[in-house]
Image 1 (cartoon, rainbow, N blue to C red):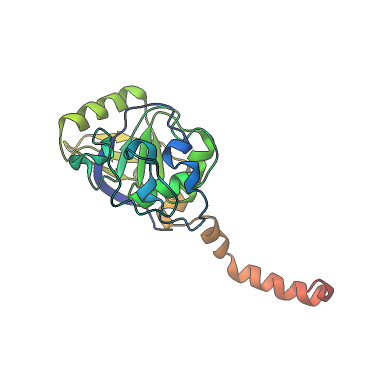
Image 2 (tube, rainbow, N blue to C red):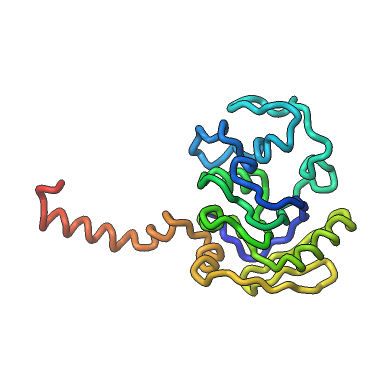
Length: 211
């Protein structure tokens, strides 16, 4: 997992509440567990005018011109602002995989479904919680300014706006440590690789019948 310290990016606004995981990545695309290749089907039902199929070539599919991520001004966006209860619905880990594969590193919302929130941190995606009034202001600024960018300073827990103003945010200390150091669950375990190896050697001596 890549470390997340300080990143800047174009902001895309998705002004709707209760975006569930089936909307983020529809059920027909859940067959793979590779963690990659899901970006082209992110928000598939909103993004395209036809029905998406697994392993299909998306390059020739008709795009929905009204969908925000299809608008040229938001091309390359890495920060998504949205509304409350983002990531509700089923517990599929493919949802943060798809968001990250598309290019998003940060989600800003007033609330999240618990499982999606936890899965995001485990996959290097930073979900930030802000008050709805602050998010209202960000939506207004993003809509009014093409190429609107935010800088996310995780170490200092600040969102820096184009005019230099900053918005503080809270993040759990352990999750912050993992993101800053690029540690997912496997990475955390491998930090104790020497102790694990030493235990296995000792265990083979003391209980050889188990091996």
